[in-house]
Length: 225
Length: 225
Image 1 (cartoon, each protein chain N blue to C red):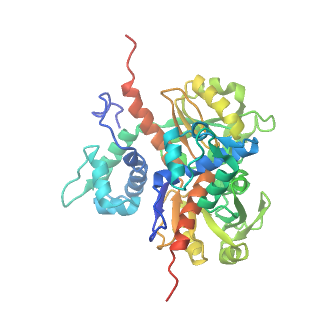
Image 2: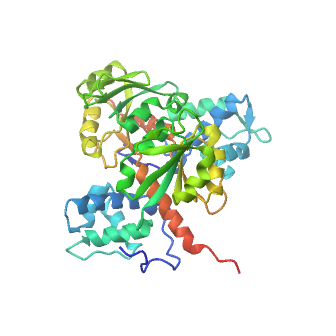
Image 3: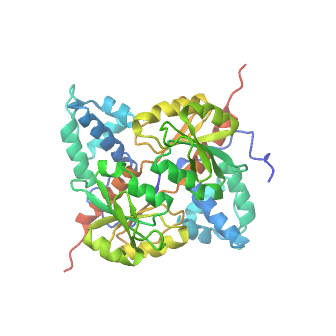
């Protein structure tokens, strides 16, 4: 998973990071249950759908004061509402894509974001061949228009999909424009001022971690007797 | 670099997952240092480039028996070799992309993989409009050809970028074809037999985690006196 860089001050209530990264799994599972018309769910069922063990589900949900009803389970609608409230997803968040190469174009076209309450509403690039084109319904503006686009579109989240050499500069421009959440796809470490949250998604790193686990496993294979 | 090293064969010491996820950060930093012609690096410098604190760097590298030389630091070439060995990256790993929509196309075009020792050598889809097309130099085969493509191309890693409803089925086909490492981009939990490693990249989940941290922060902002 992505590495989380956060420069936070005091938090209202400390929830372990390990719990935080599981909340989206529960949210995703609850959306599926809700769509299927399921009204109640046990911690075991929720655990199965989310791919987490049931004891962890109960512990994680207890941080939010959700204990379910013995013998009945959790009310799906209510838990979905609570999850949205705790994730801060009561209203949609607008996103801007900075850098519209292959990955940026994929981010613009990705339907999965809007299902979960995120709208990609703007995009910028420096390449004159890309500026002015329309990708998945969004017109690509010039990098110089970033601050205006952020303001006009009430953008909360910046998706950085530039080459690594440009990522720090565009991040500074996002921060200067008032963006406080950055999802960074460039394989480089971003420096941000306090109060700005960065998560890094480095796809090659994910492959390296896979290769590591696979390499560890191979020597452990016991030959058949 | 020789494939046989002193590290292979014997079951290595257990390395914490928290260390494993940082190894790609060091690998990436060492590649950059090596390209820049830097011969030695201190743990402080490496920490700065990798975005990790220096004490963690020293602790993480000590798992591999790398302690550096006091007052000199680590030899970049040697540490890069060790990192590659430990990540199992002495030879390139071949990957297949399953599902060539927007995200799959981006994965096929992504230059950052080959820099880090991963080659996307094959792709499949079920959509007749996509099968037979060429994306970034790779011809898209039909899903039915998956097993043959995996065998012919010595594929080690499957990148699953299908719609969620298809992800479990294609994963089973990958596993049946002998693939033991899966990077899953579909927002669903995959069930795999023992011995298969899955890592999940759910982009919407990353946005939710960002929104969570941001939401936690806002109430903590102290108004100016």
